[in-house]
Amino acid sequence: MCESNPNCSYIYTSSIGYTCNKTEKSCSSIKFSTESEENEALCQSIEVENPNKICSLKSDKSGCEEKLKDSSFTSSSNTAGSGSSNSSELLAKGIELIIILLSLLL
Image 1 (cartoon, rainbow, N blue to C red):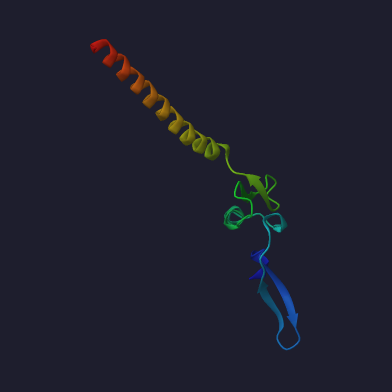
Image 2: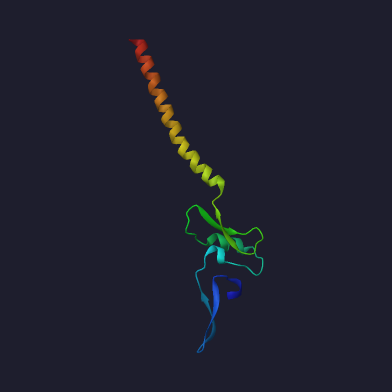
């Protein structure tokens, strides 16, 4: 079981012998001895401390590495922020238009 799970290591206990022990490892310390489709899912399941990064499979598929989150994710959050400033600008222009119309009526 430990051979297929990089979060496990064997520990020798004299009374039991070798047992598989689950250990928490950091993203960059995960190394793979064989290529598997499950490796990418395993990397993605590991949490990282920096909220701006994710754990993903290295390009050579030898292990995991921390990368900045996808630029499309950050650009969508920036778009949401700029959307609120756009709505503020529209509101200001709308108020300006109302004032101009009121002044024309008087």
